[in-house]
Image (cartoon, rainbow, N blue to C red; front, side, top):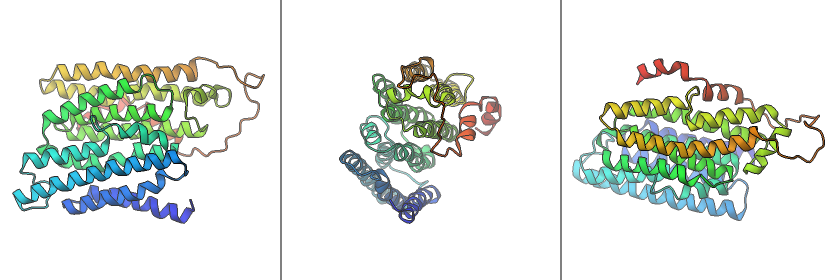
Length: 347
């Protein structure tokens, strides 16, 4: 793709998301979603092959259905309240339809089936955009309509998402699918807290985006798409294997790392609201995620797979790809735990 076209498309994607985030009028929000959806499709089909075509079609059909549902919910709300304002949702049916549409856009269970398929069919760069930037717009709307969301519906979706995200990734060897299931589980954690403490959801989303960006950028350094190609990395990038180890543990939510902050705070907030069983189930389901992250760390950093060259290390370290933002991203993805008291004050 030529640079000017790429710049225009990326600008449209960003503009679409910004319109959604900054609008308080339902029609403008819907227009923003449509701009964003239509502009991301050429990005998904950047490396043209039948698999990318199939992934883009699946993405388009799902997002178009979600947009239609959202518009239907908005129309029902308009008929009942006579207003296009986002803060005024008077009808429970409209609220349920809007929530369903937004969860479909995010890929929460039971609307999660498109996420692994689409992520697997596209390049690592496109996958990174899909699993980070594309979550911002629907999340911002859920944040704004959080007072009128049906809590029981969202808690059910959240719990099933965390379970699906854990079970689905268990026997995967494809890194993009693992990241997709990881995304479903993280979205579940965010959905669980949104009606109780929306600000905490923003903290969770920020940390999730930081960790996912770092992970994808490390995968892109060596163009790793499978566990096997990742396991050969020790021979070429010994330092990066240890970085992947730390990042995976952070994604799993282990204590001394940044990924522990959202899980700790969400469990704390839910128990404050007299909920014991759901956070317990979610914490147990998070162990499934931790298991497949540990599988990746084991094959990457804890074993030395046989390599083609006779020397232990490659004598020539050729870094062909620039990784400008990697150091700050890795630091923020792993070392933010001491800032927890400050973050809890913000919440």
